[in-house]
Amino acid sequence: MPETQVRLPRVSKGKRPQFFDDPAIDQMMTFIIELSAEVSVVYDRLDTVERLLDTKGTISRADIEAYRAPDAVEAERMARRDAYLKRVFRMHQNTAPTKPAKTVVSKAPKAAGKAKAKPKTKPKAKKRRR
Image (cartoon, rainbow, N blue to C red; front, side):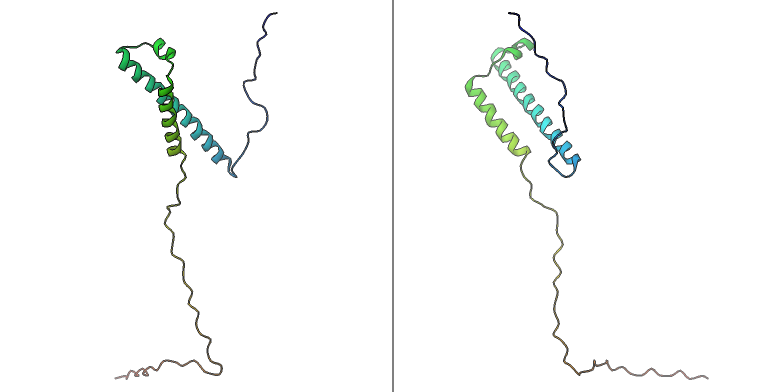
């Protein structure tokens, strides 16, 4: 019986899920997650190149593609990925300076029947004409 190839659609159907009120924030989060994944792959590939250079001295692309990390190396990489993702996605405290709250001082109510006293001032002297 001949094998049939399954062809998957290249684009997904339906609307993209939206998690934040502003769709721009969803786009930024997608960008950050995808970029973080790519950087993590580059770290692993660089680690492969460095390890092969340490053992062989010179390497080819075929050496890089054929490399399979031993369990100990894979454990190191998992620890590095975990630390990397914790650094990238850590929650930041709100460090914006805040204005101190204004304090309202309540005044005692005025006694009933008392008129407000006016400050005493000296009367102005009249200018004389000469």
